[in-house]
Amino acid sequence: MMLLAAAVSVVVPLSLFIWAVTLFMHTYLGQDAPLYPISPWRCLLSVVAPLYLAIHGLRRNSVTMSGAITGYIVGFVMLLSSYSFFAALVAFFYAGSKVTKLKAEKKKQIEHDYKEGGQRNWVQVVCNGGIATSLSILYMVDTGFMDPPLDFGHYYDATWMAMAVVGAISCCCGDTFASEVGTVLGSEQPRLVTTWSKVPVGTNGAVSLIGLAASAFGGFIIGLAYYISLLLTYDGTVLQSVPPQWPVVLFATLAGFLGSLIDSLLGATVQYSAFCSEEKRIVHMPSTTTKHIAGWPILDNDGVNMFSSLLTALLMPRISFALWPL
Image (cartoon, rainbow, N blue to C red):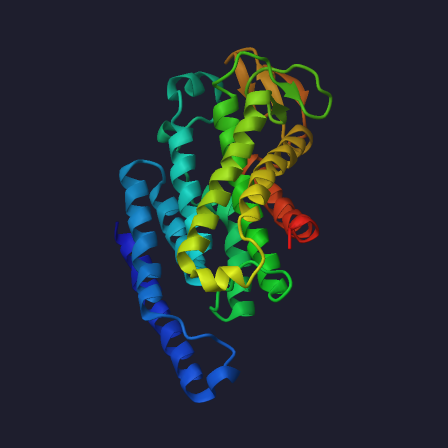
């Protein structure tokens, strides 16, 4: 806990500094100030709320200490940039933690690298949240803490980055649901996404009908959390003056589905999968007791997650801009 306390001791002064700078600029530059004055309550919430999640994750064994510290920083950045970003992150954290513990005993028999409680370390937090966090920083730079609603017509850059954040988080949540649900529910044997041949459960790049449905549902959860946050953030007058915000739920659902497919495609090509005759399950490193199934040992699961998140983040703003109803 001392390391987490050290992280808090850095974040608190940083939050106060940001608040003071935005207030100073707005006081002396007025509407010409490059940064919108951030509320002191938002600064306080950006310190306290991620800290609660980090401590909660430690107590529930959802994260390691390094994962909690990294997650705290991720939460701080995302809440400081947008309430809706943080709402999506919270939805991913709770939904992902719950589904990871689904049928844990069965997963222990299938997964070579199974961790009790599904604990995430700092590498996994960075690979799942790093892209969204980076985009959140760019979002803050572009909006100056204004956090506008989704509107490509008036706030193109901000909406582009917001949908990229939605895409990145929805991809990670969708992939988590697909892998955690698809491996333990359903009776059908999964198929390799590149050749459509049947492969053992746990093979990287394998998909199933229930897994694909679960990935879409994971994205839906992110979109719903984002949309509810929008409704709570803005009053009816603001929402009536901008395009409808509900399509974010549909695009997040699509992002969960597409992100899972991208992850499967990468897993089937650049992530090694083999069946170990000694352990009687899928492993991810070649040895004398393994029979190769698919993929080359280029990336591990964390690397695949990060690249999937990045590609989905780049795709979703373009799709949203083309299809968003007026």
